[in-house]
Image 1: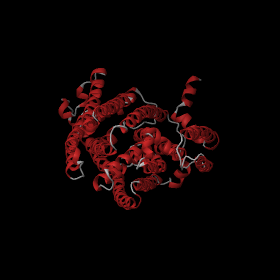
Image 2 (image 1 turned 30 degrees about the vertical axis):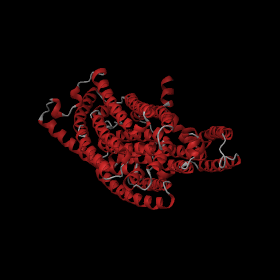
Image 3 (image 1 turned 60 degrees about the vertical axis):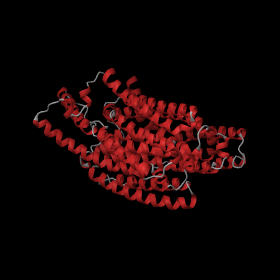
Image 4 (image 1 turned 90 degrees about the vertical axis):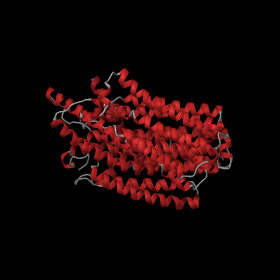
Length: 573
């Protein structure tokens, strides 16, 4: 049995909301990355590669580790709203009952989400001690390093106090709020860091500590101000039952306790899952930090290339993955047997297969047109001295391998978001076991490859890691219900054969042009600009051919479902 077209108005409405949210987030990320691109290019000209490695690898890794572990489990569990009802014929009594159920659900969500605050205290303190006591430290910057670790610990606690507000915004479709708050946070942190680096580059680590604290404080205050003062929502809405003076009858309390236990169990599962996923996502940084396999300076170069190479992942892939998870979670109840929701599963698989195909094409595009532009991008970003220095060739090779890595990231992101949204607690535990095995294998492979090829080995190992995770997700999807199979999903997901051939031919052609212009040997801006113009012309023609000749079904999905053109046309008629 194969998935049918998406024809439920409620699903279309949710899909439309998800698309708008993704679009807003992509616009935010593009704006932030352009701003960050300028700021980082500015900072690179004032601080050493060693200091850059301390800030962008060691300290930011501590921040993302504590932050991800203390809030990701609750966001995965609580951010998705109630499931979508396929029945549009509801009377007023049903709507009243649904509204009351939503209020009860929210009180249970608050009780669970509020746990992120004490968790941030415990987890933050634990990892801060580990970072300071057990890992290699920059002795010449030890005092500033101490203050930076402390500022990260405090800033995560401050941000956790606004987590309930964030969950509320996600559940009730405050689409632009997250975009605005995240934009303010990143802008303040980057701007203050650039200012401190410009004023006193020798104290850049201390400047980072101050910038982080101020940005986190503004982040939380913005959420508080918006909901409490602008929307005038009572503070009790965001407090758990034992703090909000709400009284429930015994039956309600019993039901709430049972449901809260279920949410807590799922959160604990996601907590374990978050630990593994964070290690697999930032695996190379953990290996750098724990084993000191490369110097702080080389870590700085790796981070610059990683930020550039993973730009599409942060701008596009992450937004589609996060919003896709919310959509799939709204569509399917994870603890309900699949035989009782076949229609919803079929529709969700149709969405997932189309999104995966779209992501695969985006990944192939980034690899095909980005691989030969490494030296050009790095010259713009870090200046000619950056690629002509002692780490220049390393930077180019790292960037090229990141282009390959993008293909795997693109495909894995949407597959995992679907798997995590659909799996029940037992399946999540089994998946976590698989992730644990993958993380151990990844660590061993990374250490082996790095000993032969250096820091490029991190990206090679990441490619193998992502490939394994893709296979695990595909095996789950292929067995989601008895009458479905892996080959049905792959057949619907894989790009057209002619599409793949077109990418192969264009890659070969661009390789010939790149060498014909001599950019592989001597970098000249006149030739680089000519190469960029050729790329732009080819990519425009290429997409027109793909859209109108090779991928007609995908084009219809994007136009009619994601962009909602069909619904708008029907309304006009």
